[in-house]
Image (cartoon, rainbow, N blue to C red; front, side):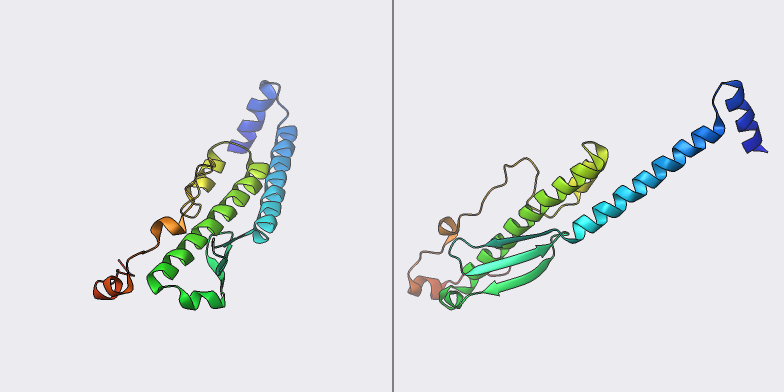
Length: 159
């Protein structure tokens, strides 16, 4: 009964309800197509990064989850605490890479606005979208103490 009343109201206002429903249906189909295209595109997105010394390479999925880790033979000479930092920083770099790709894809499908901001809020840590991410400097964080000092007072690997 309400639908009939609504049709009469629209007719009285000069609006063709069939045309309105057809336009609305078209908008829904268009939105579904865009969502499907975005989903397919995002499945192909991934990020990767290699450490400054070239010994560690990581790959992440569109969600930022680690999907591959390559450790080259030179990592045998790296202290465990330092290696952990190198792996984490390479992972963050790969996540920033994939975050930029996700923002690019979603901007094409949803444009600027609240939907894009919601996507940005759920990106992996480290990606701000403004191009001002801090790049980790391995040399700055390297433990340069002599071996005797290091072994007498080793750093915490897990905090």
